[in-house]
Image (cartoon, rainbow, N blue to C red; front, top):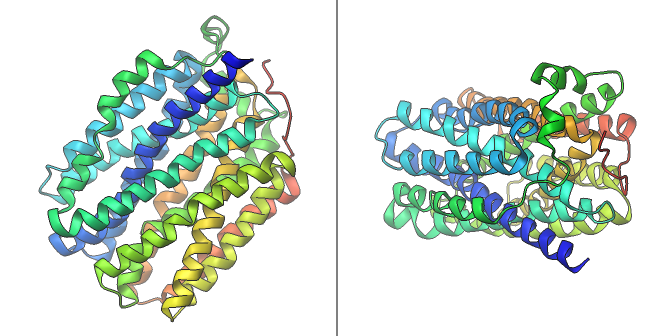
Length: 401
């Protein structure tokens, strides 16, 4: 038992550090968008496109690499995606035009979109059923650490040294990926011999077969509504603060404070997920997100803005943790990578629309309160899907059919 615990811890640490670097990159993007606006005189629509092209890449990456994870193994895909995203991120520091920057952001997104569902699948297959949800939520908590690093780097580096240096710092994981290749075991559930008999199309069809269609519908709805609202709100946070009258430095400072609330969000979700269940955490934390989003959008005073921003971070990221724990539990091993990857890919379509919608509504003169109430409504749809159609998967052994 000692050995498995160590290997679980090791896998959680290795996957988590990869996850942390990913979050650092996405987190910095929200601050870089605010800095690029000043540097390149970007319009709100162009700012929206930077966030959305990232999500287009993530949609493509989640779909392709999810399929691939069921063919060549979780570990190999985890490393390929990490290298792709790190190198593209480093090179994007050298760009001088928006077009080239957008192409590289697409590649960054592909790596990132592929890595997240594959890493959570790998960790959930290694963890015992009694602890699986908690361990995957703890994996997700590395996302908050990455965002925290992003906020700190952005606060101290971007105003003094510029966004290019900040981006170069986010390319460091490429070196770490070489170390990963040597240290990381593949999932014990993954067997290439068994998998090779199945075609990719067979796996895709299987995800929508009678047995899994309900689970797939719930996951796709959840992923779309959560990602749509998350990227719409969080990629625009520093810019929204600037629009509400704060300076860029002040807005970075407040977003850093809000980001700190992500960690207790994860840890509380990790505690509840094994004691009460996945559905409870998803429903409760998503309702908390919707209420906080509504208040944040309408807030006029600094105190209310920061308080609702803190609650938004707390509930939204706790819900994300539960979503990553819940997704791989819906499918058997042979289609787990495909099913989780496809759900994440559908979610990323929401991530494309969210930032674009904010950009176009801001340009058309709509209030931040109105925009955030749209995200509030979207989250309620996700809550209804999981509450009425979702199945509880707490303590269920992962099927190895």
